[in-house]
Length: 77
Image 1 (cartoon, one colour):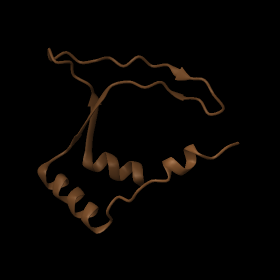
Image 2 (cartoon, helix red, strand yellow):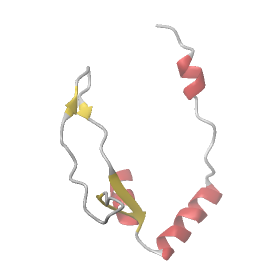
Image 3 (tube, one colour):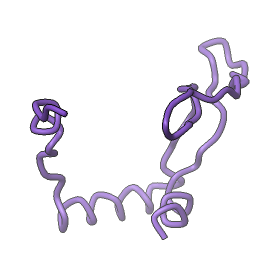
């Protein structure tokens, strides 16, 4: 559901350099217990002004809260 909602609101495409050329992503995987794609540039834009207003209303109703990232950094394994 989250993926479908994200694709409905955001236009995701290849990144564009400052000279206007498309940036072709290099597809490679990072090793690890859970393999994942290496970072690459992309363009993520709101599809329309209507979608932007929808996102603002959602954020007002359910505001972002502090994450627990700082707590997790202090956990020793």
